[in-house]
Length: 143
Image 1: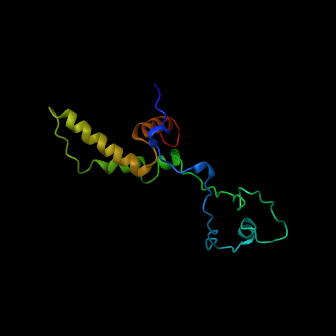
Image 2: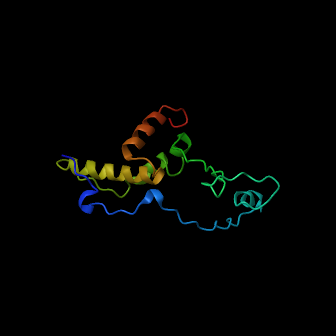
Image 3: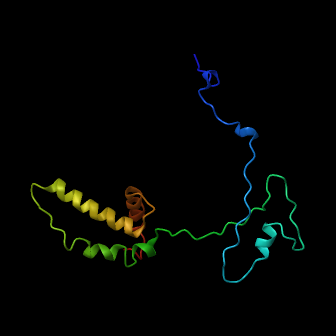
């Protein structure tokens, strides 16, 4: 049988359906070069010729999101200073133990590779990073 949450006051939650959100005054615009305050003035309902009609839910007109280009793991990044060239010296001070210690050595090797991968492109998990590098390896500039 299903438990009725209202029975025995198991969930004594406020009635969020009918609760008003707090309203906060808008933040001042960030000080940015260019001094283009027209957009901010319009977004905050200050008269500036063309008023946006404001519905009761949105007291502030939606602002345009600033798109920052996402860095990509591409051939250029892979052959950059921190990319493949960095691997040449990655193992300069690493001592591998050799015969009988293969598992340990492999762990060390992979840990260093993961560190290199993370420094080059922190957003990707190591497996995804490797997949990406494999496909980039076919490109002429990488070869």
